[in-house]
Image 1: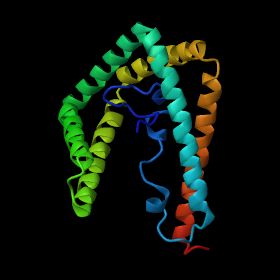
Image 2: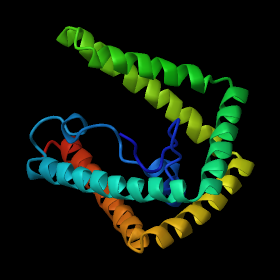
Image 3: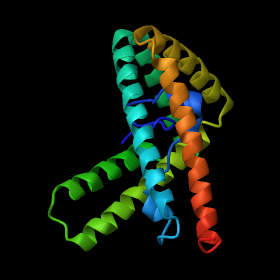
Image 4: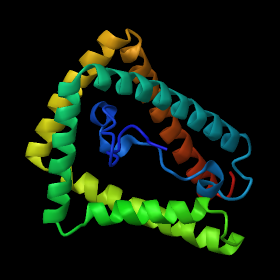
Length: 199
């Protein structure tokens, strides 16, 4: 699943951009993040919020896809930015291409349906590890001043073009930002409850 706020190999989710690289919702499920039932109804709220965020992400991703198809120059700008981010990652000693291939291979194994439950779990763990390393390397690359300028410029052009494509864009982005803030507040509350023995 693509999340806004992270660069993927194919799609620069434009709202990385508005939401900054770190604002993406964690891949963890509510239960993993909040073990035990102390959190009670909070787990359900967190899951509902995750679903809402996913839905907004999908709507924005569709608008973005249509916008990029209608504006090839934005696609060029995005591809150039992705190439520059990869280049920075390579300079820092990471191999993003190899990481993506590795993730792809592992996902193919997982979907092949030939793994035992134990093996599936191990492969899932490995995929997560690879994705985390890749995302950290991307975030590091995105701290670069020149890259940040590029992101901002692409972001502004993209959001403007998306708004022309679909007048609801800005409202959806605002809803997404609010939902993500609420989600993060809920997660903190859940962690505190867990830490405080279910207070």
